[in-house]
Length: 243
Image (cartoon, rainbow, N blue to C red; front, side, top):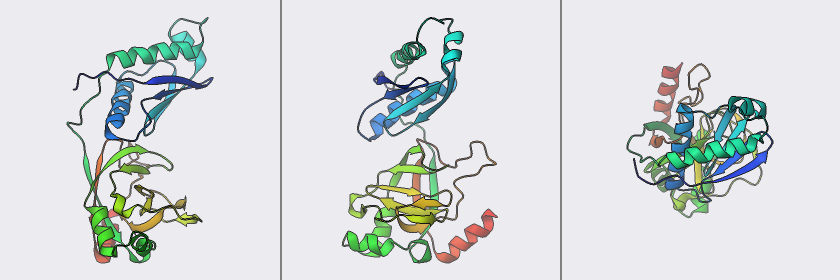
């Protein structure tokens, strides 16, 4: 553990939710503040809390005002003030953890062809070859900053700026699950079929969203993802093994 206490701003965003803002930049340091805070909440939930939602630089906590007041024996005070005090107590007692332990998850990807209809566009946009796009995309360890947008969808940080490509001007109405895409400086994997505007460069045969499992998402915030290029034949073999 480091000795740095977590600093954050606390805002009321509705009568039943509060925002804990750890910074304004997307980076590993702020990510670790978010993760340290949510790790503490996992083990020591604030009474009356319904759920919390971590993002790149913040955590939204949703609560039941009546439960909060009853739990802390303070019916007269505003629930937000009670939440604010409890969050401040946590911030004063939790230090930012170091990333000593983390999971490395290898994700096989078949690039191009029917799985990556936008791979050539990404290469052309960045004035490099298709092979170079695949190399740059798969030679990096990506940090999972958060899960969101769709069940199990990982927001990954660490992609090379050399393959950064804007979203499509007209989003597709349906993107197959397993599709790997690029949007600006981000890359991600569609765990379910859904509309989207990311540039599709490949697909993984691995199921990222598994409703029967606990937790249902293969990936979690704090994981490290490594993409492994595979052939079409290997892709089909993986699919058969997943059934």
